[in-house]
Length: 246
Image (cartoon, rainbow, N blue to C red; front, side, top):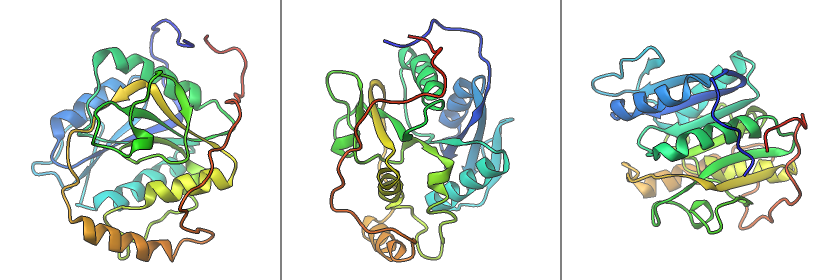
C-alpha cells in the first residue's frame, strides 16, 4: 500500500469536490463534512424540498445531472482547479474507506497521465461491470468510468461542456464521452478496487427518454465518435513529484 499515516488535513488547491444532491440532504452534508477538511467542497443542491442548508451548500433550481455537471465545470474553471471530483449524495462509504479515498484522490491529482479516477462500486448489480469491485483490491486500468463518483481533469470536461440542456438534460452518455476523450488523449482511466463505495439507489427517471437524449447529444459533440469498444491505455501512473508516501 502507498498510503501515508493519517495526518492533519491540509486543503488541496488542485481539487474542487462537488456533491450532487436532490432530496438526500443528510447524506450530502455527511459527504461534505468528510471531504471539506481536505478539499474545497460544495454541495450543489438541485431543487431539493426542503433545500439543503449547510455552509457548503449552493441552492439551485432542479437542473438535473447535466446541469450539475455544467455547474461543477464552471466553478472549477473559475477557481482554476485542474481537477473536479463529482459524486452523488446517495452514495455510501464505510468509515475505514474514508481516509484511504481522500489520500488516493490527493495523490492522483499529482499525476500527469491520468484522465479519470473512481473508487469501485462494492455492491453488485448497481453499476457497470467495469466499475464494480474486482479482486485483488488494486487500482486497475479500464476503458470506461461511470459518473456516480469520479474524479476528472477539467480539460476533459472542456471537451463536452457546457452541455446543452435542451438536448441532454438527464445526463446519460457523459461518462462515455469523458472516457472516450481520456483515451483519445492517451490518459489512463483508473478504477480503484482498493477503496469502495456503494450506490444503492435507482435512476429516478425514464431510461428510454434518457437514452434518446444521449443519442441526440452525441451528434453535437465536436470530435466525438460513439465507441463500441476502446482499448485500455496502458503504462504506469506518472507523478509530478517523486517524494510521495509509499
